[in-house]
Amino acid sequence: MAAYVFRVRFRLDPDEVRVDPNEFETVLRMPAAEPGDEGWLFFQRNLWRGNIGDEGHLRSVAEDHLGVPVASVSFSELETDQSYLDELKDEIGQNLALFNAESVDEVLHKHLGSSIHVRSD
Image (cartoon, rainbow, N blue to C red):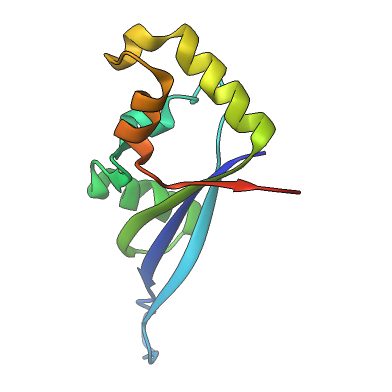
């Protein structure tokens, strides 16, 4: 299984009480869709050179998952095992025209930069 890993800063804004601190940072791991399945192009639609393309959109996505207002979100890495990465590379290779690229490595670098962490389970 693979996951997109984000650092998320969120706020607590409770009614009638105060909290201190009211901002916290956490790590959010969003499962990556299997290559070829619906949602597998998440990296293409949301990441560019290892950074988030539209922070507002991903803040909203994080808020939906966490149920709290998100102040900021940043991409850390695609955390994966070798099997998932191989499947992802195969799927990209079969669909290079979608990426306007000449190679799988070019696609991965364009979208994920060097932010791929392969676990050795």
